[in-house]
Amino acid sequence: MSAELIHALEQLEKEKGINKEVLIEAIEAALISAYKRNFGSTQNVKIYIDRLSGDVKVFAMKKVTEKPTNDLLEISLEEARKIDAKYDVDDMVEIEVTPRKFGRIAAQTAKQVVVQRIREAERGIIFEEFYNKEGDIVTGIIQRTEKKNVIIDLGKTEAILPPSEQTPGEVYNFNDRIKTYIIEVKKTTKGPIINVSRTHPGLVKRLFELEVPEIHDGTVEIKNIAREPGSRTKIAVFSKDPDVDPVGACVGQKGTRVQAIVDELRGEKIDIIRWSSNAEEFISSSLSPAKVVRVDIDESSKSAKVTVPDYQLSLAIGKEGQNARLAAKLTGWKIDIKSESQLRAKIEQQLLNFNGNYQIDDEVSYTDYNTDIDNGM
Image 1 (tube, one colour):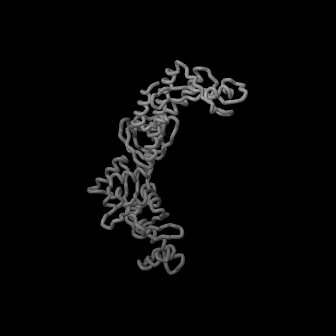
Image 2 (image 1 turned 180 degrees about the vertical axis):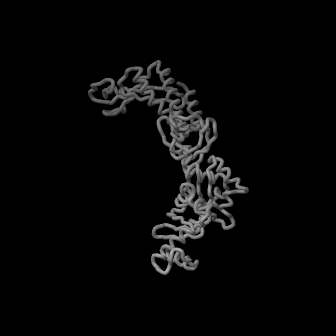
Image 3 (image 1 turned 120 degrees about the horizontal axis):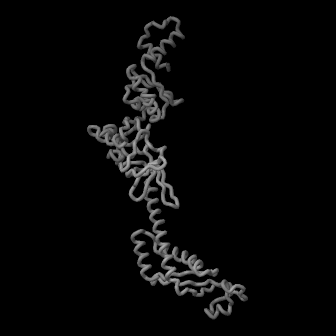
């Protein structure tokens, strides 16, 4: 070993950010094992690398005793004081035992240690980089599929898109560029494992932050997201500036902003809802694109009864109840949807039960209808 080693370690410190002293200490520790393995020694040894010249020296560590019983581990007080008069009983004496051909072994060992530490350092750097990106979007290229997992090349490393995080109906083709949401970064002996998602609501949120400057700068805030991946998403937005329309900002001129997100999500429909602190208004908006006639809420049970025009009932409920389901998830309220005719029929039946003067075919005035609704019917 020589000064070239020290110079090489200094270069690594600059380029890779690996502390030179840490590397030297690791090499010294590895050389102890190499010495014992190659020279069959059971001595306690210490190895020192000169920080300037790179010279390697091996020292046997012996304990000073009055009557040594093991010459490999102990030394008499008399012999110790021949080396240095300062030694006393129980002190440790360092005696150089560097083998002649130890330089070659030292160089080989140093190379192995440095390569290993470089790998560890690079893995550590990658882990820190992506660990700090948890909850963020990364763009990668689809490489292959392994046991239903989609492997995505992120440049410095690979990410795993497991089946549970894949959007139903999406096809992942080799070499396609794809945006994913980092849900977890784990450190392992073989390097970091990065799990990503295409189904997480956070993916939609981050995409809007990328496409809508007003969200990125905080003028428009995303209050909540309800998503059924691959099918439909509802997103509630609010503007802190009364002059900025939060829905318009997200839609963009001629729908360009939201369309870019729809394209990235492979055609997933997106409803942008104006958030309101008024529960009735928010619930009414959440059922978009359906038009709502009336919303009656029950604070105690956090439930809402919504009335829609007859021709809007199927739209409000949505295919297999999807629109109503997403609205309930977005608002946090239990929503019961009825058409005007269904509500009128229910009121007429209740009136018939409580007032014998009414018959099923009798006309019920609009005033009576409203009064009954106001009374909690």
